[in-house]
Image (cartoon, rainbow, N blue to C red; front, side):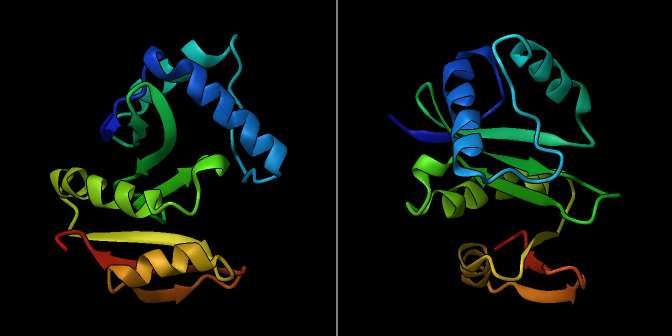
Length: 153
């Protein structure tokens, strides 16, 4: 199969629901993380579609398998790109691949820079930002840093 970014859809239901349970089991939930269930999945997909263009969510998939997601938030939100990989597929370079695949989408939204926030102690996120020559734009003072990288590469 080919790993690609895809529009969220029913096709990825099983993998997405499994991933949400992985986040719960790993204790790696973040503020505002919605945990989908069989009963709420379709409504969540509708909500993702309705949020465009202020929030563009794309899923990193391999065939029908859900691997993670990229959220592009143009304007009005402190970060332009959010990336989350399901716990069972981490440490495989997929976040870097997701960022690379997202770059044309970022440019299509008219953004020339990608702002990324991460916890100051998130070594994997910091390596990803460094890979793209990201620079610290500011310390948010709450244990998080805001980095900026070029959208064009």
